[in-house]
Image (cartoon, rainbow, N blue to C red):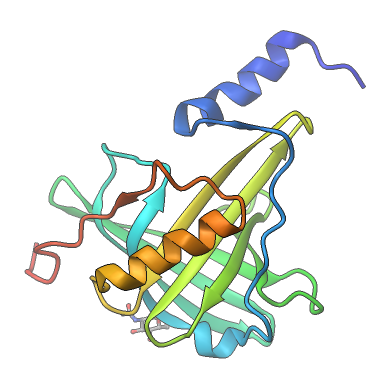
Length: 186
Ligand SMILES: *[C@@H]1O[C@H](CO)[C@@H](O)[C@H](O)[C@H]1NC(C)=O
């Protein structure tokens, strides 16, 4: 099927604005061996993310709750202009042979987006990666460092960045998330 250029461009443009696309297909990073979904549940704070979204909110956190053995409820929240905003989604293990490769969707009309747990110790930090191929020509990706606390030691963040890099994920544009002054009431 050959799509008219205009259609392709209209589809790609919002993604380009959100992120610098990389040529070629998605990398194929190693994921957390023997991933335990149950242990991953609970509250995670966003420590750093790719791409930079300067205009976005702060105090971003996500609360995962198991709904069945392989599906979860996902509630993410942020503070934006003094307001607490929440979005709710669902997540699934799409292939039980690859339990660390979750799919998450924030809307019934949207397909599941990849949400791969590259590495986690369940109690301190987690590395999450999401990548989508576009027309097999290039890919756009997202990456997060999550913490069980609002901040993580520099060494942990550095190690996380190295892990991404070792898996051919370009995190040079990753920026720290704002988690200051979050526990005060709005
Ligand atoms: C996370 O979600 C569970 C289930 O909905 C709820 O009981 C718990 O209080 C939530 N935790 C936070 C920190 O929001």
